[in-house]
Amino acid sequence: MRTWQESLPFRWDLVTPDQLGTLLDGAAPPDLWFLDELVTCTGKVLARSGNGDLYFVGRSLDSMFDLLGGVLAGLVGVQRLHRLPLSFQRPAVRSGSRWRRRPLTRAEVAQGRRFLAAVGLTPHTLARRDRPAVLVDVVHRGATFTELFTLLRDWIDAEREPWPVIRRKLRFVGVTRRTRTSPKTYRWQQHADWTRTLPAAAVTNVSLDPWVWSYFGDHQVKLTRSLYPDRWLAEDTGPGRDERTRQALAEAAALVAYGRSRAGRHAVARAVGRDHALAQPWLRTLVTNLTRS
Image (cartoon, rainbow, N blue to C red):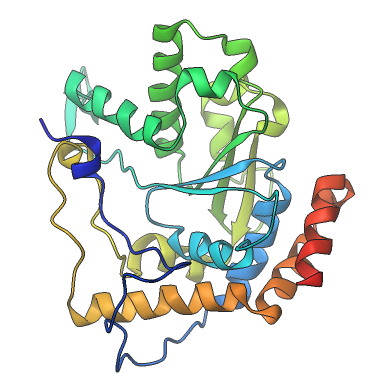
């Protein structure tokens, strides 16, 4: 059986990019046409994180992870960033008159728990955290969050860790496609029963321009392969070296560089400052630190 380290897709560390070598030599400057929308959305995600550590689920928000990697680099006492590049997409099987995703196998559940443990999301550590664990992902119908919550909750029950304590340590921030609001607007959390087992403030959404949302979720070239359950136990094939991957790497590196810049940090600070959550002391301190850097 492959270990979780062998199965986890490789991704370059772009905050301390000593692995890149000459990969970006000759690469065309990336067109960051989505930058203003990304900055605004990133500020809102920070503001609504409750001063928690951010876990980016899947690959869709890799650009937000990269931007924040630059923004928060070198700041003391700020959110820690993690990637949890899991996907739960898998073939459907018939269940009565309906089709549903096939259940995870016992081996996949065990491997999924190893992935969670690798980023510190075990039942034991969750019960003893001093700040929330904030899971962030683009959301359409909430299926990924539902499966991730189920994987965690079943593990918590199996380990007999205190759910009343852990429920206060978990938060979910969904990045949704911006639409006109109305009483008929679909809100994914209202259709997911598990969200009602968490405190009201633990599940929140941030909207994003639909073109940018679709780019991140459907069209952007990613630096890692998708990690479906069918691939959770497979050895990683390593990073791509083709021209499309080089251009994607140039885009990611440019986002990190912008985040590290004075202009980038001030832009994110302004985006945070426009959110009503700024009344929280920790957030005011973060904005002050960003504007001073």
